[in-house]
Image (cartoon, rainbow, N blue to C red; front, side, top):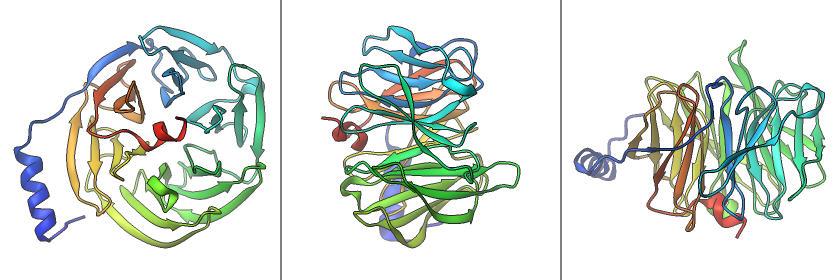
Length: 294
């Protein structure tokens, strides 16, 4: 999207002249890279991600970089994609095989079905409000379209919008006032007004890109949006006004998702599908998701 304004011009000049951030390797996840996705960090600083050595497995990495297989195989052939962690520490997984949102309670490895809806295509990524309401993207890759779902605290599913583009990355802004949803193949990021009960309204276009794909997204405490640019090998940082503030250069070209963690919530972890490494860099502000579990 071309932004012709004083603010946009100034932001472009600052972005062009500022020192470019680059990511470093954090931990080697393994040579199996097909489904590396879904990073999320718990209160203790442990990083979780999906499909470390095979589809259906869940890995956990300590804050010091020690990797272990947390769950060897999800039940019934389930395969997870996005992960979110609730304020009580519950891990939620988007199970794109069996149309589920799965849940694992803190300090337990028993997997439960939190929500199921057979009319879902394949739930892909999740966002979570401070009151526990979950929003889910639901793409149909073959048809290049997708849906948007809400899952309430009781696990009840509600279709919020259908026949979108290939819905993928999804995130809630600080204060639960806005919802961001991107469409990977259409390269668009949409923003909605979000009510306290998870209703969406006033949909408008935040930004549109001319090339490469879009994947997972997270916001920081200032409302800036961190977007994995699949194929370009960067994390794009976008202001709430839709201005590209900076791009963090990655070593991998196929970032799938990002999570905030570390001691102050400013450490970003990025899953890259083409290298087998989880990469890391320091953001200027803490992540919104990190503040939810403090």
